Length: 485
Image (cartoon, rainbow, N blue to C red):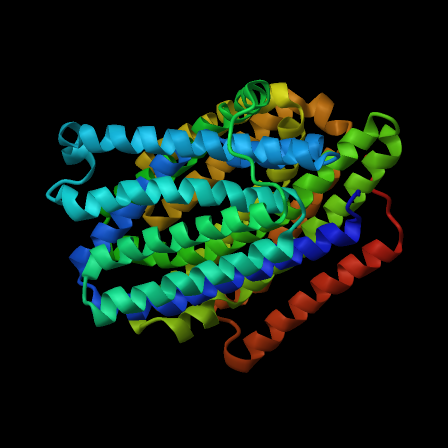
C-alpha cells in the first residue's frame, strides 16, 4: 500500500513532536543527574557515550539506513521483508560480538588514547557493551520508520526513555553507583528493548535468524559508503568542542553546549521529517519510472509543505530560545541564547540538502558520493574552526559550521544537479529556505538591538510568526505548483 501525502505529514509530526518531547525530558533530567554525579563522573559518562556512538556506527555498517531503503523493494512479500531485516540484524549481531571481543582483548593498546586515567573495568567495558546493544536496537528502530510505523517507533522511544530513567533512579539515587550506574542502566534498557524486538517479530511472524548472502551483499554495497559519512560528522562536532575548550575556555564551551542543545532540536526536526518522507519518496520514485511527471509534481508539492512545516518550527525555536533559556538555566548561562538563532539558521541552510540527498539514497550506486561531500564539508568546517574560534569564539564556530554546510550543499548540487532537477525544483527549495532564514533574522533583530523589550518584544515576535504563517497560506492558496522552475 502506497503511503499518502497526509501519512507523511502525520508521521513527520509524530517523529518531530516525539523527539522534541524526548529532548525536553532530557533537559529536565540534567539537574537531577548533575546533582548526584560529580563533574568527573559526568565527564566519564559523556566520554564513554561518545566512544559508544563511534563504535556502534562501525558495528551497524550503515545497515540502519539500508533496512529503510530495501524495505521499499521487499514490502510486497512478508517473507522477503523478514529475510531482509533478519539478515541485517544477524549480521550486526555477529559484528557486535566480534568487534566488542576485539576491543576487550586489545584494550591495553588503545585505552590510553581515548580513556586516559579511566579504568577499563567498569567504565570502558560498559561503553563497549553499550556500543553492541545500541547498534542492534537502532537498526530495529530504523526498520520501524522505513515501514511507516511512526506511532509505534515514537511510543517505543518513550518506553525506552522512561525505562532508562527508572534504571538510573535505582542505580544513581538508591544504589549510588555513580557513572557506572548510568552506563549499566543504558545496557539494561537496550537489552530489554532488544528482547521486545524479538517478541514483536515472532508475534508478527517475521522473526528470521540467518543471512541471505546475495541480499546482504546488496545491502552492504549500498550501506557501507554511508559509514564514513556518519563518522565524519561526529568527528567534526567533537573537534569543534575541543578547539573551543582549548583556544577559548571551558566556560565558553559550556555556553556553546547549551546553545547547541536548542540547535540540536532544530536538527531533530529535520531528521524526523526525513524519517517520514524517505519511505514515501522511495515509493514515488519507483512510481515515477512509469509516470515521472505526476510523481515529480507530488514530490515537489509535498517538499515545499514540509519545508514550511520545519521552517515554522525553526522560527519558533530561534524566536523563543531567549525566554526558554532564562527559565531553564541559571543566570550565568542566560547569554547563550544569542547563539541559538544563528545555530538554527545553520540547520535551516542544511534543510534542502536532506531532500537533495534522498535522490542519492534512492539510486543505490550513488551513496558513495554522500560521504565524499560530507567529508569535504567537515574538513572545511574544521579548518575554519581552527582559524576563527581563537578570534571570534563561539561565533567563529558557527561561521565554520555554516561554511561546512554550504560546501556540502554546493558539492551535492554541482555533482547531481541534472538528476536532482528531474525530481525537485532546486531554485524553489533554495528561495524558500532563504526566505525562512531572513524572516527569522527580522523576528529576533529587536532582541539583539534592544530597541524592544518585555511585552512589546513578545508582541512583535508573535506578529512576525503570524505573518510567516499567513504568507505561506496565501502562497498555498494561489496554487503555485511545485513543477515550476
